[in-house]
Every structure is written in structure tokens, then in C-alpha cells.
Length: 87
Image (cartoon, rainbow, N blue to C red; front, side, top):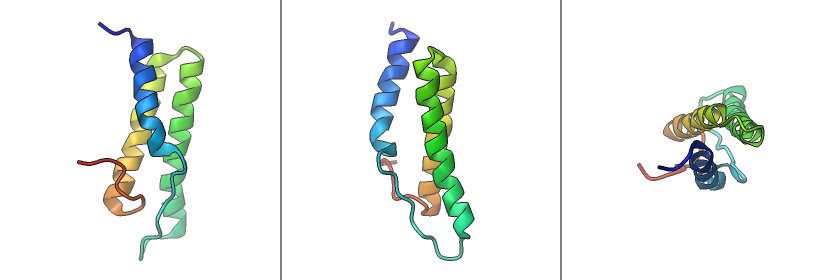
């Protein structure tokens, strides 16, 4: 079975394209601050995931990555981001 480090490494590599040049959309009727919050949270959690990984904290790296992807998925459902993956 794959060890935790290599599994997290694989997840981070697979998620990388989702966060490179992530752009948010303007959504009619939604406050600019809320739109920016979705973007900032996704990017921040992804950055945290990378930081935890570099420190050897693979559990928290994986947890932060899951939060980052959750923000992406929620944002895509609301139109904040274009669909980031096929459902």
C-alpha cells in the first residue's frame, strides 16, 4: 500500500492545475467581498496544504487540500468559479 507521503504528493500534483491562475467570476446579485472571500479561501487553503507538506505534516496537508477543493466545488456550484472538474 502506498505510504501517506506519496499519496498526499499525488493528490497535490493532481490538484495543482485547479489552483494555477484560478480566476473568479462576477456573479450578479452577489457582493464583491463574498466573491473575493471564496477565491481567497480556496487559494489560502491550497497554500496551507503545500506548506504543511513541505514541513512533513502530511495529515494536515491532506486536510487543508480537502478544504481548498471544497471551496472550489462550492464556488463552482454558485458560479463563482467555472466548473473545475466534471461531476
